[in-house]
Image (cartoon, rainbow, N blue to C red; front, top):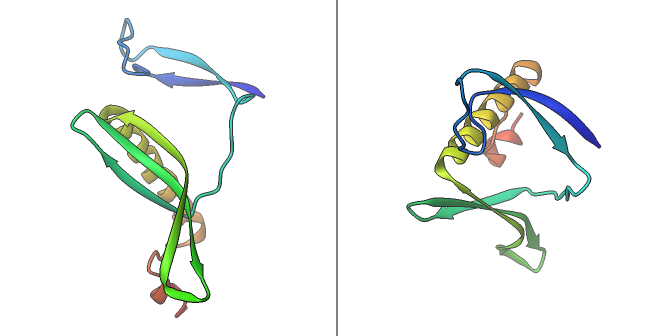
Length: 112
C-alpha cells in the first residue's frame, strides 16, 4: 500500500529550500511490520533516544513479578523524538475529545 501525504517544513532533519513550502511524501507500507505493545521503555544518550516496545505479562504463580518481552527498539535523534511526542499528544487529545478522558492508573480506572 502506498499513499501520499502533504507535509510542511523540513523532514528527516534536512533543510528544505523555502521553509514553509509544502512537500509531498510518498509513504510505502509494503515492508512495514506491525507489532502490539502495552508497555514501553525509554533511554538514550546525549545525541540519541531509544524507545523499546514490549508486552508486559504477569505469570499467575508469580503475582509480584512482571516480564517485559521487548520486541522492537526504535532509535531516533531528539528532534525527531520531540516531533513524535507532539504528534502523539495531539492524537491522544483528539481521542479524549471524542471518547472522554483516559485514566492511566489501573486502580482508578477499575473504580468507574
